[in-house]
Image 1 (cartoon, rainbow, N blue to C red):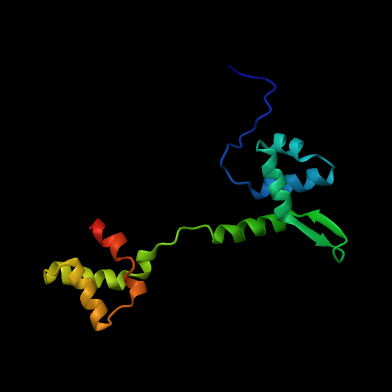
Image 2 (spheres, helix red, strand yellow):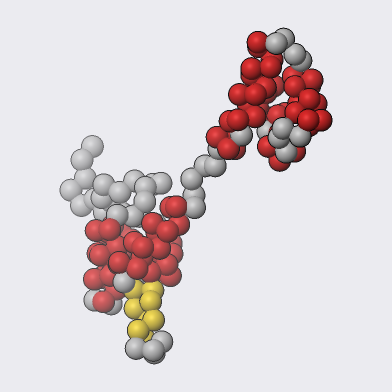
Amino acid sequence: MDHLHSTTTEHRKGQHLTFENRVLIQTRLKDGWSPNRIAKEIGCAPNTVRNEFKRGTVALYKGNLLRYKATSGEAAYEENCKACCRHYDFLEKGEFLSFVEKIFFEDGWALDACVGYALKEGLFTRKTECLYQDTLWLC
């Protein structure tokens, strides 16, 4: 069923705002539109527009005037994206894992013996081996 007067656009739930959306928010706020009205035009939740307004607001004229700028909103978004990736511990502990793999498969040692030997000889620190229980049991 087609609706001639649909208020939704292509924006779907869970998608991030684009720079074009931020520019649109900036121009609509200058025109005096409310966050609810802007959200209807973009096709997102009104709270998304309010959050974006907080994120991209800058102080102008020695702090006397607060304005939303699309460029500062985009810069804040990209800065937040840098910190939101997954951190893989096993990449940092690859040397320890290859040591255990070599001793385990080639020399036939038990996993506990590999770790005990590495600790006793001081080959690796406890911080390096803390991945032991999480990763090696999955082998």
